[in-house]
Amino acid sequence: MKNRDKILLGILGAAAAGAAIGLLFYTEEGKKTRKKIKNTTNDWADSLGSVIASGKETLSDFSHKAAKEAKHRMDKLRGKAEGHISELKDEFVN
Image 1 (cartoon, rainbow, N blue to C red):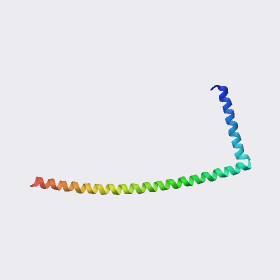
Image 2: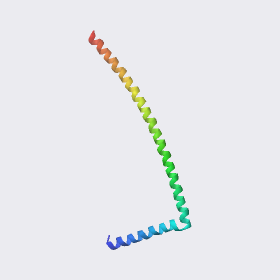
Image 3: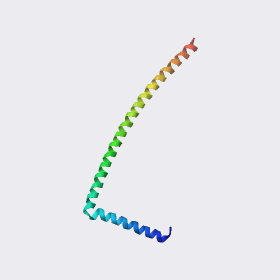
Image 4: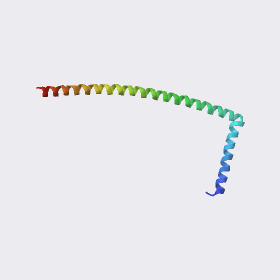
């Protein structure tokens, strides 16, 4: 792309941005649009907060269940190991 084309594209982009800003800040419709944008943004933020809170709760529940299951399996393995140790002791003692 030639420098002349880049400059022309930059000028057109700046003009479009200026027109959009002008419509948003200096017209009655712009006030309504800004209000809609603000309300929509607040709604999205609230929704995102709810999703994050729900995700934290689900993760907490999952971690508690996983810890409980791990403890149960560890106790079961410990019991088996103690049984094997007891058998070995009996075998070597006799």
